Image (tube, rainbow, N blue to C red; front, top):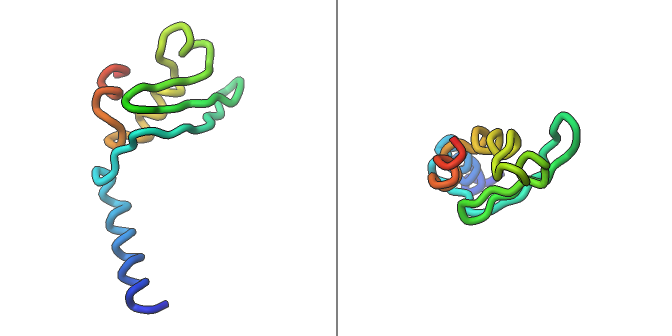
Amino acid sequence: MNSNMISKVQKARNYAEEKDRVTLESFSASFRGNHNIYKVSYDGGTWRCDCSSFQLRSICSHTMAMERILDGMIAAQASSEAS
């Protein structure tokens, strides 16, 4: 591996330890719950999940778990609404 690539790898490691450098604006994920696999998405500060709890309450254990997993990497407005 050449020295330029070695420095890029080291820089990537440093960035990975500084999660505050990243703010997720939108994404979708499959979440394997106890009873099913659910589609969870986040876009512009708004969470969505296709589980029945989210459909009733606009919040669920799947979106709350994702907020914990991504602590500090999503927009503050969504975190504070669900906490």
